[in-house]
Image (cartoon, rainbow, N blue to C red; front, top):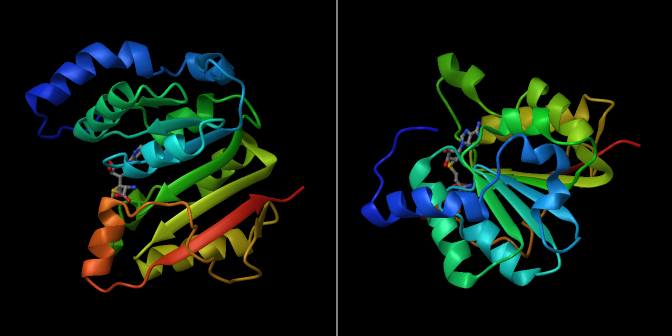
Length: 213
Ligand SMILES: C[S@@+](CC[C@H](N)C(=O)[O-])C[C@H]1O[C@@H](n2cnc3c(N)ncnc32)[C@H](O)[C@@H]1O
């Protein structure tokens, strides 16, 4: 977990709610047991303030949602929202996405979303970017063959790099067409970082990909 300024209410949520609405990496091996009802399973990585994962869980009560976020205040916000709204179909944890993808059962996930990942724009920091060839090689076995990977960023260089990795890989199909950007998904709410991109008048690049059969 990364350090972060956490309010008293958030600290309380982290203390009280993780055992109720969280998960750990051991539980992820049998991930469907975390949820009361069977349903398709969707993962949001780096959900930030949790606007989108909570919105998705409310809009699609028959789907199950997992979220991972290494920033404690973001995790706490999600825990507070799950409790307030009594959502039975969301579980969140402060685990690293790489550890989660390494631990999860093969083909457990119907979709994976990464919206506005940290861009690390300086060249010497590029290697810190979450989505790279290694990440995609871990994501591939975790997704169902009919599964969907969604990525959005207002960092043109990062987005181009991910689009190229998809295009150049025999494991992935760009669902928008070869080397094309996807439309914005209708069911995503404006996240904090999407709002920020809008204020800065930055173009947003969307990628939708699926594992090749
Ligand atoms: C730029 S923010 C975007 C947050 C949110 N998706 C949005 O659109 O507002 C990126 C988030 O990814 C989280 N993050 C970065 N690396 C991560 C990792 N390896 N596993 C899980 N979360 C991660 C950060 O803590 C941060 O909250």
